[in-house]
Length: 481
Image (cartoon, rainbow, N blue to C red; front, side, top):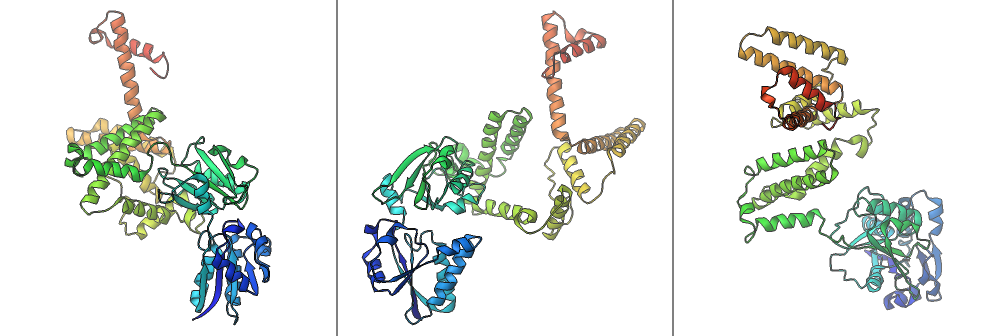
């Protein structure tokens, strides 16, 4: 294998940080190809070699990927020359240099040797500026890759360093991604020109990140951890400690089945918070529900059944597989097409019926509505709501004519099922509607009892007409009554 390509790291920008090995290679070279000449070290390179830059490709190509592909193609082609080629990049060749990764892959395919001359990356001078230890959990991420995400791929309990934050528009996109995880006021630090004599360090709230005027190709961003433990990883470690020897006796005794009532209870309490439109309560109840989920997972981990990573891997793959119009190239016109495709994909996964997956553990109203929604996706439905209303009247008449307890139970079930169907047509959640009706009844009945106490009356001794009058008085107080 001929060694035809030498890739040199130019360091973070201070010419004094160019390594001795890099200086020797550059001094001996006849020609040097630079990914960009917009780097402070370039002006101080040893005299002698002819310098060529790929900066023009950034104007000619539409995407960075096209730029780096073309650089790799040309460098590998030049590497076939008897004298080989020297290619120089900012920092360390294997830190944030996409063109280098493409060169390595292409050269490997074509049997061309590559020598990497290491250089100081931007990371070490930033660590010096901020007094950080990289082994204390520091996470590294490229600004362009971070900006392309909707949620940052970061653990908020650990510090993070964002490299190559090269302009204000990119800083704005990075800010929006980070704000999906970090509060607007979370302090972040911009480091510009780390390792240079005029290095700049500025700390600000996250929301001000894209208001900084001097963001350029020498800029990095430091994001400290959140002040309180907030990551899923930390929470799972908390639960694992509860279950470990020396942990909580109650938690250590739990099994999948023993936790079933708690899982159900926390689900209903989260629903109650939703019904009450209480966001503070919802946050708390979702936390309680998450506790039940992670407890179940930890029990599975200890039994060698599955891990949290496998749970997330499976649901993430399922979501992406069932949304090809988002994660693939399928085009849909509306929600109806989305639901139709969803059922077709599920059938391809081996589902026998569109009704597979509707849990028998659901409350009856919720299960009835879920069954009807699934059937409607394949066209088994009334043409309009009027047909459903007529069906309700028909079922009510059949209930009136029913003889015996079993027949009445069956006809009442059919009537309830039809009422749930009407709820679906009205875009109303039947389970929530009945739950809210129960709450309204409780509030109003308690209001009647309060009125009776105020007036020295006994509710049980009042006539039906008087009770109805009290009911209307309570209703007249407003929607919260």
